[in-house]
Image (cartoon, rainbow, N blue to C red; front, side):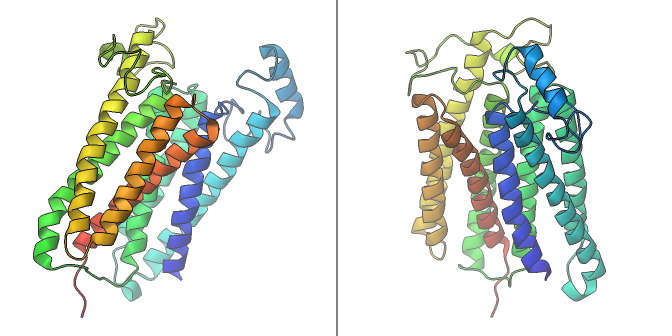
Amino acid sequence: MLRKLVWFTVLYTFIVVVVGAYVRLADAGLGCPDWPGCYGELTPHHARDDIDRAVAEQGGTHGPVSLGKAWKEMFHRYIAGGLGLLILAIAVIAWVRRRELNQSPWLATGLLGLVMLQAALGMWTVTLLLKPVIVTLHLLGGLATLALLTWLALRQQPPTVAATPATNKRLRPWALLALLVVIAQIALGGWVSTNYAALACVDFPTCHGEWMPRMDFRHGFQLVRELGMTAAGTHLSYDAITAIHWTHRVGALVTLLYVGGFALMLARGPGYARYGVLLAGVLLAQVALGIVNVLGGLPLLVAAAHNAGAAILLVTMVVINFALHSRRTS
């Protein structure tokens, strides 16, 4: 029962992460400017009068508030609440059946703490008006939840190994570093998204027709500041936005070279060829989606697919790292 529940929750978490990305990309993050309800109501339908007044005050539905955006935001909150209940159930089962399962329940307990932190970050995302560092942490928290749930789900499977212990030991450091590279690139991608820097460079592979355009890294990577502002309270320059976007591109190149090289290492080695092919396919698809986002002017569905691709790439690296740490069975 626990195995089925955990795997279902992995899939459910993936959906929550993708829906959250879609809500952010659709500029619906402030569709309901309070938390946990919508203008103090359970649903946007009950808050219709307040939403209509807010739309009138902002001069139309082009602003951050509209009935459609409110429903998108609340739908994400509803399914995120469901995720919290699923993880609570997993933690309870893990403790009640810990002797039968012969597994420590602390990973499940840590996941429960993480999802509670995610709820707080979701609240602060709204109440602090999309402050970039909070929104980025919220994104990373969702992906961390997905990664840890995947690890927990894999623990419920019979331990198997595709190669010899010596091969596994040799590959583990490379796999761990590849995982860290992916996490760093996802963090950079989150910073691009939360600072609305995805179209800071609209050409490819150059940026503004140059390999090294004019950039302001100091203000672009100030963490504690408001959206679109520097820490000093002045408007964030286009050079700072360019620096954010350009750094993500450089990170993508590093990721392509290192993780792609690791994929080739797996594909050519004994026992892990299918993992290498899978990793290479996911990586190349993710790079292609990033390029299409730039050249296509950030189509909403492609941008959401790019976020989904990041989640799939992370899960793939978690699966590979787990396989390299599994014990051989007879």
